[in-house]
Amino acid sequence: MNCLPGETIFRFLEGELPPNEEPSVQDHLLRCPSCRTAVEERKRFIQAVCTLSRWETPPGFTQSTMTRLMIQASSLRIPLLAIASGFATSTLLVFGYLWLTGQNLAGFFLGLNRTFLTLIKTVSVGTAKTIKLFSILAKAIRQLGAVLLSGIGRISDQMSMEFQIFLVLAACVLSLCLFLAIRKKMTIGVKT
Ligand SMILES: [Zn+2]
Image (cartoon, rainbow, N blue to C red; front, side, top):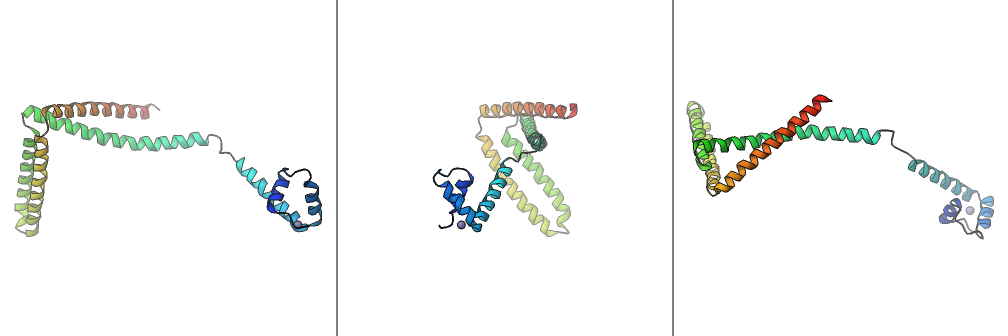
């Protein structure tokens, strides 16, 4: 008789052999040491697989992992909220300033540009005497700034009054929500 194929050995171990095949398999195993070894090896393998599948996470593992993840997520959320609320608040301040002074956004940015240019000029005049390069750099920055700011001004010229009001209201709501959210986060941290 030929040696037992691997599949037969597995089915023998699982007790899935047809009743008429089993006596011949057992008979072969009694006479063939290499097939006995094969059966022993597969038996150990099956036991190892069963032990692995029975392995469980230590008690509280899931909860402690989830808690750790939550802490990491919330510690990231606070600075992000702060940045977003800062952005919303500064948008609000810009629009508030514009409304109080009666300027439009284009005028505001042009004014900002002029202030910026004066600052650059003042600084560059002092240093250009010793460093020529700085004035060239300042000129480049000035031109770049002018292009950028006139671009922003042109965009804001095309914004309707309704859209500007909508932006301000949205910024209002956003800053209020973020402020409340941050305060809630902070108080949670304090209480526990
Ligand atoms: Zn054999």
